[in-house]
Amino acid sequence: MTITLSDKYPKLIRDLFLYDTVDNPVPTNCTDYESLVCSNFGFLELQLPFQIETEKLLKEAQSLDWVHKSGKYVWLYGHDKPLEEKLDDGLGLDIDTNYKTEFKTDVQHIPAFHKFYQSLNELCPITDITLKKVKPGGWMDPHVDSFGNPIKMYVALSWPKGSYFKMYNKGFIPLDPGKAFWVNVGTHSHSVVNDSNEERIIISLYADWDTPAWRKVVEASYTNRSR
Amino acid sequence: MEIRYTYGKDSAPTEVLINDNPVEDTGTIQADFGFYTWNTITFKGKVSIDKLILDGIDTDYFVHHGFTENKGRGNSGTEYVKYFFKTPIWQWYIEWTQNDNNTIRQISKTHQGFIPL
Image (cartoon, rainbow over all chains, first blue to last red; front, side):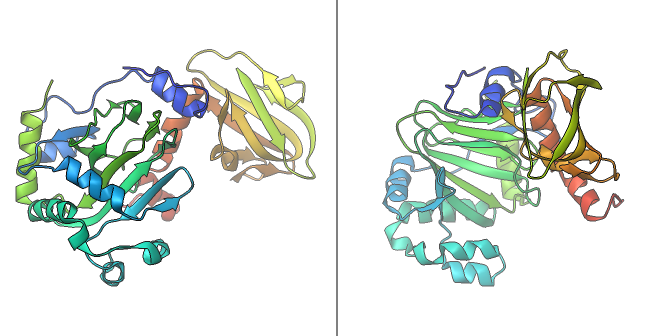
């Protein structure tokens, strides 16, 4: 699949979306969790053993105070404990302190988010969870994320028509509200665009993926993936 | 393909070469390159390069990785600054930045070229 974007987006993104025709999110011959992780795969749709309450999560996400970052997109740390504790535990970086004043920790106001967090945390300990928005007309240049933990999970809460998540040499991730993907962002360049008139909101998180329960989720998702 | 560049303050360029052939030093150059070919642009003289835009793509990261007469890397030299690039630019640039940031490369950089076994 290719996408023709208008001139308002940087040429690097336009060329990536237009000329990269490769569509190969995962290899076809993986036998187990290890072989998938070691395959330099791009992305895999996840079949989680619990329901994602997309509409409730979206409402809660929209009710939060968002912190603007870089002017192009905004994010908020949604960890379900005070940020100070998170920092004391060594889970955050120094730059997180910028978000202290805006941070809301009261999980009573975000029950669906809390439930989602707890459900996933039973499968794999979450180390960092973030809500991210891309404004209408916004984009992120092609980049590679941290290789400390190269695989990230994304859950789309809103995905207006015209939203794209493109991974170089792997294809467009078919995100949609309620869909969850395991994405190898630390290995492959990727770029996002919101070519719509609405905000695009996703949950983005890192976890310790090396648990027996999570391995089962990944293996089942791989086996049952749509082809 | 269009090449645009901007010199830094106090630059004193003497010549611009594309694939070792002199071209007019106008700040904007039109040149044809074969698909999937390696090419060079060389700025001779005492120069620093502030911007290098290849095929409309700002190679912001790239300007710090020119080859200079002192065997170092950077965007300024007393004799020349030379850049390599491959067409198509978008693909070369994405692959280059992706690989330059990969795990082994980062470890290698940190340890001055040694890859731990």
